Image 1 (cartoon, rainbow, N blue to C red):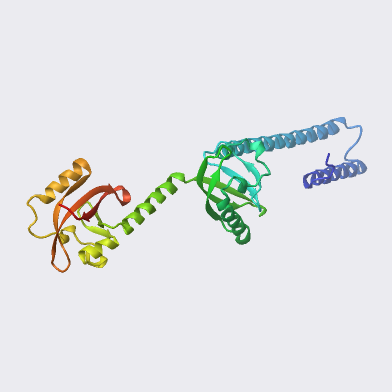
Image 2 (spheres, rainbow, N blue to C red):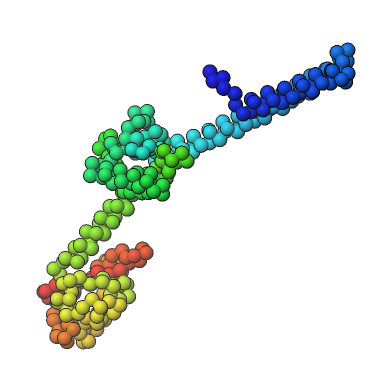
Amino acid sequence: MNNEATPADAELRLRAQERLSQQRRALASGEHHLDNPQRLLHELQVHQVELQLQNEQLEAARAWIEAALASYTELFDFAPVPYFTLDRVGKIAELNLAAARLLGIERARVIDKRLGVFVAESDRGRLAACLKSLFTTMSDAQCEVVIVAKDGARRTVEVRTTLSNNGEACRAVVIDVSARSAAEGRMRRQAQFFTLASEAMFISDQQGVISDVNSAFGALTGYAPEDVLGQHQKLLRAPDQAPGLDQDILRSLALHGSWQGPVWLRRRDGELVRLTQRIDSVPGENGEQGWVGRFSQGD
């Protein structure tokens, strides 16, 4: 048991000593007489009320602290996103239920283990660098790593770290970005396919205004990207195309999401080339649909 006096204990003792001195002075001066039981009883009653008030204040403070602790514990434990408390080397001091579910292991079995144990080996250096940056600069740091759960399930997550008040630990929130990461991966692959495709391709909005072209496009048409970006795709057609072609294209895109047919492509030098054009409707930026057009040899 700790017997060291707190500042509050010292203050209470000082007040008691002052009161005792006052009572002794009063007795010595004749103000306070042992034969005056009413005065003594009054003093005892006042002191009793003071003690009761102090006890009520202590009980109210304890109740407030317990309620705040219960609220914090509930907020931490049942938060929908994983939370960790880590030391400088990434050792886990605390984690909530969502964090335990992410790792696929009971909380008690994770305490004092390094979070890096549950990170893909190729990403452990990235997590270590994130923590080093946090404690060195004392500024929030974040990184993206792959978490490998006990059952082998892999999740791409974003780890956001904030320094604790004592500067010796950090709070880390872990956000599952697997869906976003997969979507970005698909977009990168699609962009690579578009750029390296052997067919001449362009991307436009639903009005047919061109926003991007690939390398093969320039080789086939003779147009540099700056010549066609922002221009309508009609720039690429011979003026005497079949009547109603635009209406047929729009109708087919609306009904089937694609159109294919023969066209006369007009190169930059004015030469006409008979090709097959295919246009597909694809999701664009901000949820709007766009078109991807491609040209190939054939009728």
